Length: 97
Image 1 (cartoon, one colour):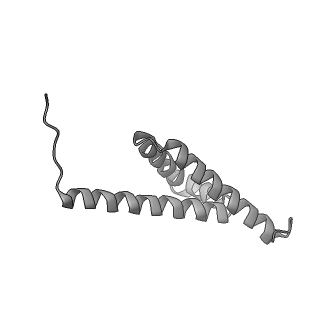
Image 2 (image 1 turned 90 degrees about the horizontal axis):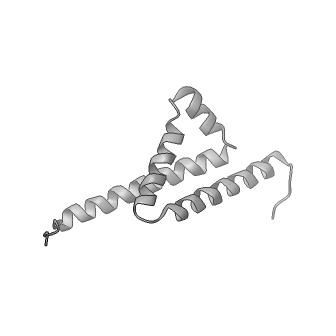
Image 3 (image 1 turned 120 degrees about the horizontal axis):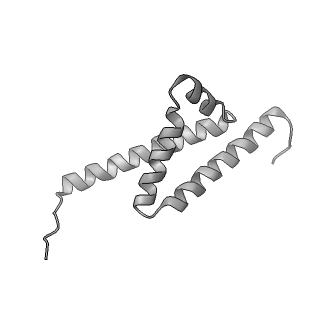
């Protein structure tokens, strides 16, 4: 029977911080994109070699690899819907309380 590799507490903590940071970065970019009505995604495609879509795809694959693919999709959908409603409110097209 193979002996699984043991990780040090330092390696575990570093991995957790790295994952947390990537989650914050991904969420911030999704929120910014939603707040700009998708303009960030368009600018990313036109001027930054589609960096935003590549990051979203990478994070989705990582989430799926640990069984959180559905939760990641739901979070991105919720951020997008919230940003869209804020954009509509700011444009005066719909009243929200």
